[in-house]
Length: 308
Image (cartoon, rainbow, N blue to C red):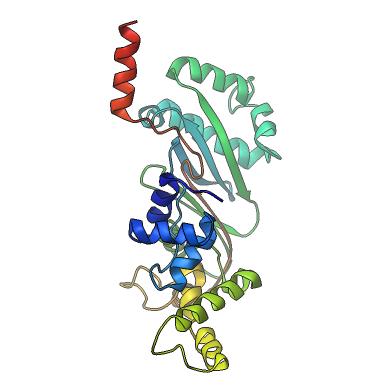
C-alpha cells in the first residue's frame, strides 16, 4: 500500500513522533496507519495514538435535562459567528425540548415533530431560521436518557456536550454528576469501565507491551512467560488511560484516587449511594472533515480568475 506526505503528517500528529520515524513506520507497514502506530509503540517511540479527527464543523454540542429527561444534541452551522447568536441557541434549546418530550426515533422524526409553541414542524421552523440567520443549519445527532438521574454539562459554550446518567439513592447527586461530566470533557475516555474493553484490544495491548520488552536490551533475554506476566501487570495503567472509572480524578482538590472512588466517596459524604450507569459525550464537529484551503493558493486562484 502506497503512502503520501499527508499520511506521514497525519501519523506525526497522532503520535508526536518525528517525521523520519513516521515515514519509516509507514514504509514498514505498507502504509497501514493503525499498524504504523503499533510499530512505533513497539519500538518505544510513541506512547499512544491521539485522536486525529479534525474538528471542523461549527455549531454547538448542547446538553440539558427537561422534566427529568436528559438530552444531548449537536446542531451544526456554517460559521462560529452564527452559532453564538441568540437565535441559534434558542433553536438548539427548543430542539432539545422536542427530543425530551416527543422522544423522536431519529433525526428525520425530530424534523417532522411539532416545534414548541408553534403549529409548524421543526423542518419548517429551521427553514425560517436559515432565511433569518443566513446560514445553512443541520441537526446532526441527539440522544436521551429517560430513566435514573441525568446531569448535563456544556463546556466552553458548546464545544462539548456531556450527559451523565446515575443511579441515585438518598442524596442529591447533581454536583457528583457535574464533576464526572467535566472529567469526561477533559479526559475523553474511550470506555466508561474496564469491563467494556474488548478482549481483542486487551490482547493487542499485551502484545505491544511484550514487543516493547523484546526491543529493550535489558529485557529482551527474559523468558516469554516473565514478559507476559510483566505485561499483564501493566494493564492497570492502560485502563487508567482509556477507561473513565479507572482514570485519575482530575479534581484532586476534592478527592485523590480514581473516578469510581470519587463517586463512592462523595456519595457517602452526602449520606447516600450513587452508581455510574452511562454517559454520552458529543464533541462539536467530531469526525466531520471540512475542506482545508491553502490561503496563498486561494488568493492566487482568485487573482487568476479576475484576470481572465
